[in-house]
Length: 127
Image (tube, rainbow, N blue to C red; front, side):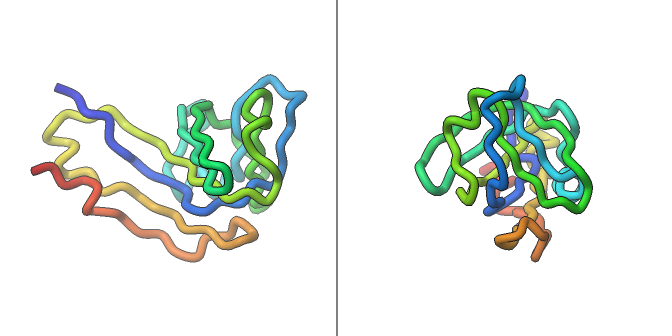
């Protein structure tokens, strides 16, 4: 059996842009993508702390060091610049892999600069 487990997340990212007139997706600073082990075109879930909206989309790399977090296309209707979001990536894992999974968490400041990187072992615990 496979389980869908949290692989990594960018916690408390600040939305810098919302571009309705784009094909779709979320643009993320490529440095942040690397820190959180999120790949281009990877499916992610976006959780908006300001309004409770949850949505799924795919990632496109943004300019390194820019701090960009831009929701594009229809997703732009669910955020406003300045909103705080959590960007979560998941992985399909065997039960053995899931037991060993230690999700990577990157906590960001108001300028989308990393302030702490850690693993959340408690999320990987399977009883």
